[in-house]
Image 1: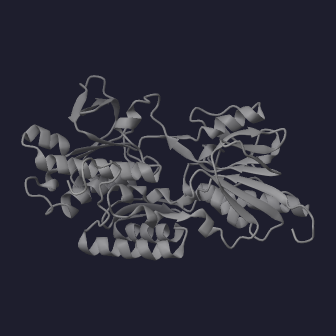
Image 2 (image 1 turned 180 degrees about the horizontal axis):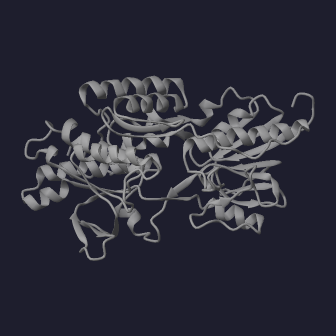
Image 3 (image 1 turned 60 degrees about the vertical axis):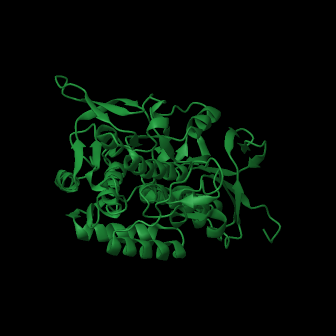
Length: 438
């Protein structure tokens, strides 16, 4: 600081919703903020499924962290991977051996896919958590149509044109709807030997309804909309096996025989678990036991254990809400916790009375199903159809980190809506063999 005093060092791990908002909220405060992330960009994960189906390009939903924070003179951005914590010495340990000291630590490294012990399924059924996940799913989906175009055996062609989405939450519903639109509209006139509109899209959900967190009426509307798009929805059913050429599904009705679905393209949207860094932090603090999904139990003020100087927020944290159930791992929770923790830090530095416990203000939830179709509930109101879809579009645009991203996405969505075209249908991720042009 200019007066020669030492600024309070705040280290934030993770440039997602919670970490980024916390850093922004500490702008122009008597703190020295260091934001550490393995990636150099902030990613808007809720729109990854649109990258996976060619509606948007990765750059539309990601912004460089340095660019977002370039005007914050008290903030430094470090590209690095955190591997451990020296809690007694108050330092974060990076993979390259660097030690980053802190006075206050905020850990917000989010979550990853949860295959419930079936680790071999990860290769056969990628999820949607990173840009690489999205482009890999896009490659698999688009490549399936290309293989179907070349197939001469009707059974092989049908297998290539079958797509399975596991998980009936918002991500699964949105992904299934996007694949249906891609197959039945965008690609319909692109092929000569095969009709993409004949594709079979299967959505598998282990609960008795899709969008289980929504009101039953909205869940029923979502199911009806999915079925109206030609999507097969299997409820009360669990995946038993994911093999290279088929998926085996067991209905919860034990009298029913397992169902085999021949496919090569499976997308996983059935569960997430907290970042492994949560366990590392719990071990470093001592006396903290993480939950089954790796979530770190936090105090009402988002601190961990007996450490008032260490906060965990976002998907990593386990904190009961007003209903006694853990708060959901969604962006609004993370952003509100980021703002709250920044406020706690500033109050402490001013010597003011600490803020009360964190309270999540639930503004509502929504999920899009397809073109002009969505469901939403907010402040006691429940609505669906075009109005919900427009609300979904507006809110997601506002959450994008940078103004130019908002304008690009808005234009892209308008163009997609008018033409049903998805311009980012690029098959990438495999190194070509042979000479150029071969």
